[in-house]
Image (cartoon, rainbow, N blue to C red; front, top):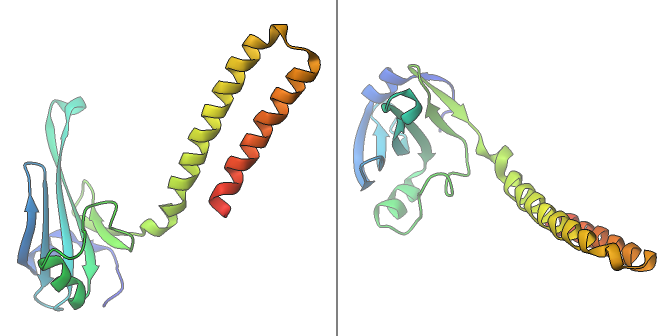
Length: 164
């Protein structure tokens, strides 16, 4: 397969033929397409976004995930999930507001989900600590210290989980 390089969107689209439409809704379409010139296959994700802040303007975006022949068959027979973004874990081409398709590599974003979950867990622990601390007026200094140690132990536990 050729390396993913920026391309002219109109030229790229003109060389494509649809092999099979997998799913279509009012705002999304998934299909398998083939480049007639190179015989390369792509999973195409077409999205229509209604931009309410711009008076309901419709913006259209297209994403093209290169797929090999084995993936073509498993997608056609429904044996492989294809939904965006969950199943788009390798580099693909995506459009913007101009006439280009630009390569995008999602692999650098995989770890962000774990980081976000850890941040949310830490925030929840902070809220619980603050609530307990506000009710701690009647606690002794030793009990306040125990409460603080427990809080930091929970934070350490949260930070260790993604690395294990």
